[in-house]
Image (cartoon, rainbow, N blue to C red; front, side, top):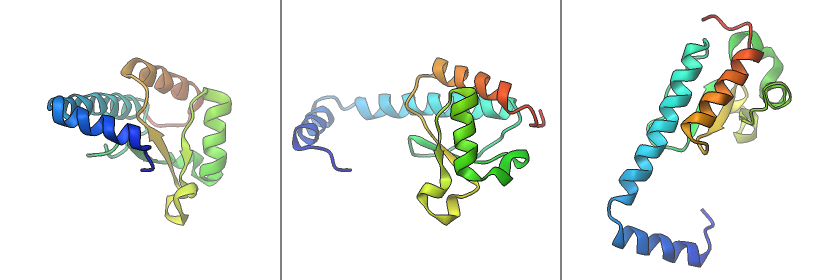
Length: 125
């Protein structure tokens, strides 16, 4: 969305000349998704893994739901050094959720999960 013309041209050349690239990118995001999904499930915060996006929506764990998505996201930044998007920013239906962007590699995702595990002590494992 909103990519500049040089970026669009580069993408077109890539798709025409590197046919395997989309498969490589898809695998990268699958690995990141699985790292987040597996890590959060292990600490007691299960979520539905996304099937075709670079984002993962997660319901706010029950012990923290009354905080709302803005305060919960703020707490994760302050206390766990993990940035998520508050769901309310995507409309009223997102209020009890946060959105993770799968932009970091699996090692950084595992590190983020460890930080969240140390903060979210009320989760059932």
